[in-house]
Image (tube, rainbow, N blue to C red; front, side, top):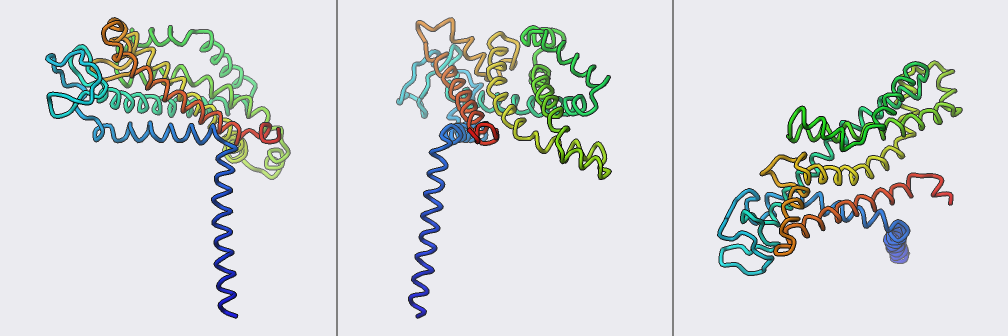
Amino acid sequence: MSISLSDSEGSSRANRASGGVAGAVHWAGEHKSLVVGAAILLVVVLVAVFAPVLAPRDPLEQDLFNRLQPPSLSSEGDTPFLLGTDGFGRDILSRILFATRISLTVVVSAIAVSSSTGILLGLMAGYYEGRIGTVIMRAVDMQMALPAILLAVTVIAVFGTSLPNLVIVLAISGWVTYTRIMYSETLSIKQMEYVMAARALGASNLRIMLRHILRNAFGALIVVATLQVGNLILFEAALSFLGLGVPPPTPSLGSMLSEGRNVLAVAAWLATFPGMTIVFMVLGINYLGSGLREILDPKLRIG
């Protein structure tokens, strides 16, 4: 009797385990964009975190005897130049690894500043409306009337090029997106019955805004923040390409593209590999954002 019971328990566990694996595979198949995007983002984050360990050389080390070396698996020295060298003999692979780290650091810092500012302003504008909402949303309109690149050039021309200033520029260009999304979400959510019930029960404005409105708008904000990562990576690369982003000799994907454009005919690898890195990063972020939108947007789930 005990043997048959043990056998049934074992088969039950096996069925649950196989069902869990099958369920995970089925879920991954239904959310391919999310899985692919998360995998790409994981690779990028690991590369950024472990850049000092993965880089075969110092990204700032110059070796004029090895300038414009093509990609190779063999070398006269100890370590081959897998992705070639630039005009100063610096290892392209090492510079790409550190440039990825710097790009993610700058972008994540900018999103932290812009999202916190934009969410707070949008929440206040949508909840209180009236004069407060009018002032905030007119400021948003003024910001959107200015081209982001013009604003960036103005700020950097006044304060100079540095990583903190680059973070400020990216944050200034991105806060309006969060403000508009939070404003529309707040206007919609505050009309819901559970918000009216909370207000009737004596809940404070702060509690309603944080516990009921912000909490229910969190899904949309996560999707926006994810997609903003890709946009800001491109914007940071564009500013660095123009000489307005990461100051040299600090490695940057945009500045590496700028250096490579003048020697495309003789050293195409200078621009090819940084460009492919940007495409890989932005593609992964967009896949992740698309997958998150499919999961967090109830309209898409119903459809």
